[in-house]
Image (cartoon, rainbow, N blue to C red):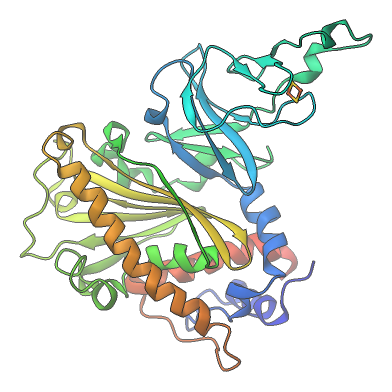
Length: 374
Ligand code: FES
Ligand SMILES: [Fe+2]
């Protein structure tokens, strides 16, 4: 399917002139039906998608299920104590296998009771194992390429993505002193918003709106004027949201953190849909995926240092994130409506510290969607 003409033209301009005056993409980039097929293939199936955190499956046999890009999957822990991501579709006649979350010795299909181990290997197929020609080896559940990054579980569904590490070259240095691998999940939450996935990802990752949209919530801590972009990498971009002098900061933090790190939230976007606000005692993250041209799924959570749970600080961080997410949601529903106007057009972007991340993302999208054909 061809991309909308004006989006194609704009992507070619972005690619040919990365130093030109930064403009937003045309409305069709955010609302045209023809965007989604290429995005699904080139950006999401061929990329890395976060499906949660390793501490959501702390014990061998633990599992939870979710759908990503309409694909039913299982995140589990095998007997080798590794996090494994499997297809949640039975290799007999297609039933879903597990639902919700729990712990199981085997993965047993509720339909005819075929059962699998936590690496997806078929263990038993009652009665069918007498079928002439039956071949157990051809009945394993698809097991997806998985990469753990500071506790986040990323998968590549197509098996064709490049190395995950390549997309975060340069990003690790901004993350490691916070030690988010020690943070713990509070309440993984899946929501469906009637919005294009890019509107939410861009919004999460630009500091320009912090003061006007979050005047009472985020502005007292991380006002727009204190945002500072970091250099983009091949598969990521980000900025530092420095704390206002009047903001007291966070008490609980890892001793490795520098003075600067203690006084900022590190904002990172690992393309296409993983966005992160990493702070000294907790982090908000979202994994955003499309469910339609103007519909998205966000699986989001707040993770926090273990010592914040008993005091209620962890729950307070989650509630705080829920409240500013709601502020974003209201604004973005207006944006999505505005973009359908026949008078909607491209607009000038703010300087790099404030909206340079959006411009970086356009470079990524132009690479993925038009490649070398520009
Ligand atoms: S569909 Fe799973 S055992 Fe038949
Ligand atoms: Fe926001």
